[in-house]
Structure formats: C-alpha cells, structure tokens
Length: 212
Ligand SMILES: [Zn+2]
Image (cartoon, rainbow, N blue to C red):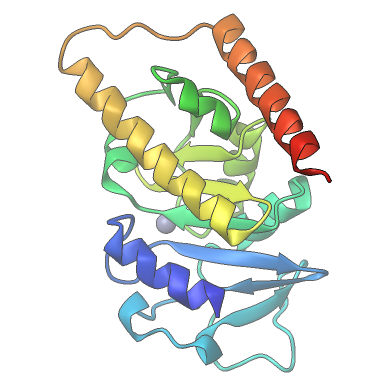
C-alpha cells in the first residue's frame, strides 16, 4: 500500500525518525491513516487504519490505534479539497518553527506551496486546538509549519503531498543557508504572482500541445 511505502521514505529522506510524523489519504467519506506508535520500519499494509470523517473508526478496521494527529488530518480534509495529508518532524522545519513567524520567499519555488508558509502557534500534539491552528494558518497554502513541532503539507494525492513536504524542508534549509550570509532578499508578492501566472500559462500550453 502507498501509505506504507511512503512512510518508509519518510525515514530514508530524513523527514522523520522512529514513528514520528504520519500521513493519510482520503477515499470518499473515509480516510486511511498510518497507525500510532508503530515504527515505520515495521509498518505493514494491514496496520493502516480507516476512520470516518467524524473520527470514528470503521467496524471492519484493524486493532491498531489511528495516528494521534487524526483530528488534524480530518480538520484539513474538512476545510480543503486535499486528497492526502503528510505530517513530518523534519529538522530544518522544526528549527525554523522555533525561531521564525513564517518561512519567507527567498526562492520562487515557494509558489508551489501557495506562497510564504506561516508558522501556526504552539498547541499540544494530538489536540483539537492544534487541528484548528493548523487549518487557520493553512488558509490559501498547501503547507503549514507548527511551532516547536513540525510541518503539514497536503495535495491532490500522496505523491504531491509528499513532494511538497520535501520542497518545504528544502526551502527551510536554503533560507537558513541564506541567513548565514546576512540578510537575504525576499521576493515580493508581485514577483510571486508573476511566477504563479507564468507557471499556469506554461502548464496550460503543455496540456494543449499534448492533444492530438
Ligand atoms: Zn507530530
């Protein structure tokens, strides 16, 4: 199952250690989510949990407990059209979360996340309060950084949500490197809008040219 193979990648890509972080995929009215407290190295497809949008576990589900961050995943599905959600404890993002209010645009690739990424205020892991804070800070973005905790990205499918987690970690790293030189220059909202418009135009052109 996709969730198991991507969970293994979390470790390989350095986005999480042990059993930290979690991910889910929406399928109709149900959400498939990684279980709580099972290390990624030992996770098997039958360990994946199925929950309804109201948080109740489905009767045909397994004995595992769904991820402690299930309320946050469900709140994001309720507030967006996301098809998948990835939550990481990746080091560059955690470091930034403790020291900054947002991840600014030092590179235009940040338009892939909807623009500068906000840091949501600290609320205890697994709480409804954290779910609400994450949803609020996500507004108009596909990524949010959680103060003293980690990050969440979403996308139309798991591949896109996961790629965005990697992009977010890379952007946090490049920002830290830029800070080591001094005060980095930041792209303006107008410059970012121009990038977004150009990306759209090119995607549209690609789709047209692929048609017979
Ligand atoms: Zn977490």
